[in-house]
Length: 213
Image (cartoon, rainbow, N blue to C red; front, side, top):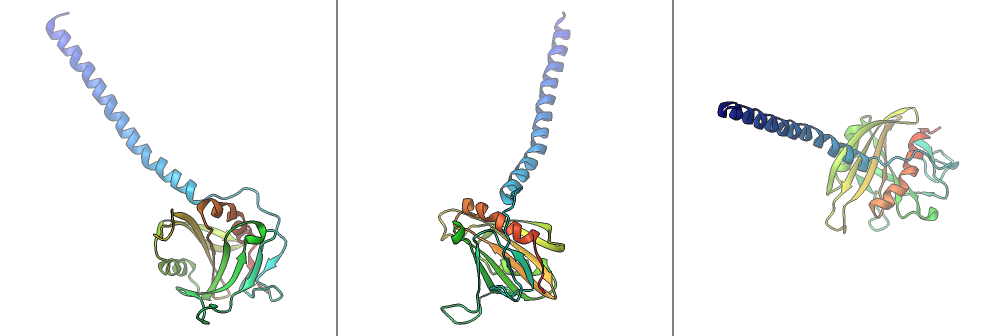
């Protein structure tokens, strides 16, 4: 092989290597955002396939909380009405809604509440955004459209990054419109792990929700 031929072959090989490297970099660059989005969604929506077989309904006139909607409670969870802040004596409000009911998970061995807020309105997403605007230190909000029973609803999963916490934790809220009122269900939890253990209680409420009679 002549010197010119060797030189031509070397250039061709080098070009092929550089092209392969660039192609791999482009492919990796295209894939990385998808992987990060997928991971974020996985962290945000830890839904359970099997839901608890709750039988007790809350929301109707003969339940502890009178609400525009009714839904089933997870076994051993207990609901009680919230009329006023025990310290100030006034209504507990956040954005456009007022706290009406607390569903306590402690009797079921869970540390946290499923809180029900309500107020006048017909736009669930706007009410949900206004509700979160009153809650400081939220990050990584992810929204999705869902059904609450047969009703259209919107759900948000986000991180609570308050500096008062030792670490960030996941929380969720669900908003639905019923009889010209907004109802927001908020699920917290002392840690992300505890929150995820309580998610089935929110799912059960969402899937069994009906307009109260």
